[in-house]
Image (cartoon, helix red, strand yellow):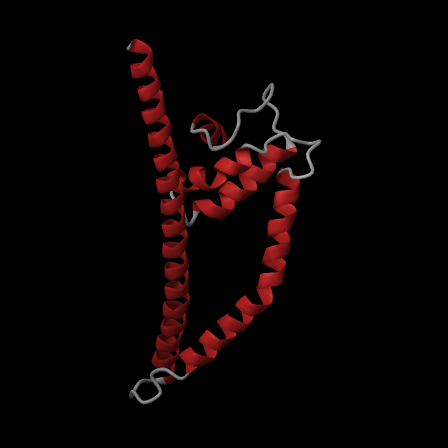
Length: 159
């Protein structure tokens, strides 16, 4: 699988079949995103990181990026746990007025809880995809402009 990531330009190729710390950092990000995003979206997302690849002397390298993201995750964990608790307690209030056995009611409440969690993931995934679409559109616009400028230059040279 890792070789496929290198072939598909998600990951720079290994040097003499050896992977560096930066390779591992990119692999962590790929692993993290592959259950949510398409390979193309991951490629778009990781493009700026690949520009920082193997910059050990730089102050802003992949290790620093990873550390910053890890800190953000740690800081964001408590509100996520609180939100999950809120959704769980709200799900326990569902289907109280329906005549079901305790076991059926519990299964329906678990279903409600999962629906709430899934909807949250769905909305956030849509938001991520929209952001990545905008990045892709911006990059396409820059590429189109660049190609247009190159064509104009070639046309001017001919005249």
